[in-house]
Image (cartoon, rainbow, N blue to C red):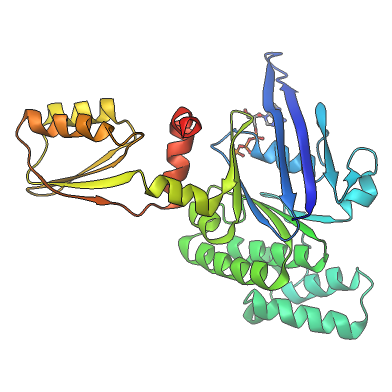
Length: 324
Ligand SMILES: Nc1ncnc2c1ncn2[C@@H]1O[C@H](COP(=O)(O)OP(=O)(O)OP(=O)(O)O)[C@@H](O)[C@H]1O
């Protein structure tokens, strides 16, 4: 597949004014994005995602490395390169607050040299797609955060760029609107075949929308892998063990010490342990914990895994992933 974005060995340091301490936000990060791909850029707080996104859309200059968009170096051919990108950054919605939803869409659609007929068509399409029709005559100022976010993404789509960057598109939105936005994005991604980079903490967004994920931790790429492969990989190692009784506190302690990424669900009379085993022989260590106090194992099953668990396990147990 053809590469549309090439991020090569970029680094970014910040100097903390007060303490004069140097912070490495991004350290030698490289990844590619292919045309038509939806890439999830993930990482815990402070991992360097926003800095990376800002460098890709030209808002920050890397201290080292280079970024090419459609073969154009963002530092050398800045304006030409940036023509291929539109971005909706966290907390920064490029909307006119004193205009209505429709006026904003009409303004940004007209701004791109479309004919009146084309503007009308595009605006109607987006109002429908983003389920904003009911709100079309309301001022942006008075809209909920979720509605503003939907409109900001609709406006970004109007730019008709090949690449769209969405930084935390569902951050701070309630469950309902977050779900709705995810469904809309899913439909758009499928219909429009654009290249999208999404940075998110919202793992269902990643699981549902992204083809591939790049996980950054402490400024460095720790995973660059297809979502599907990661799910499969972790699924084969995840087990759910149903016990005939409850674990003692001593057993619980041993479980957490030996398997820090496991979880223990205490029922009324029985417990269930969900655990990820690095090597299949680790099951003996697990069973030893149960055997010591005569806890019976009723059943053991492979467990379905969601992206949230995959992410947590990679970020918490980075080393284990590297060993796979
Ligand atoms: N302007 C700045 N000055 C000093 N330090 C900064 C600045 N911007 C970011 N940082 C630091 O750089 C590191 C990476 O920040 P960045 O915002 O890129 O991470 P992030 O992965 O997007 O985090 P979050 O999910 O919390 O937004 C953090 O330690 C952050 O405190």
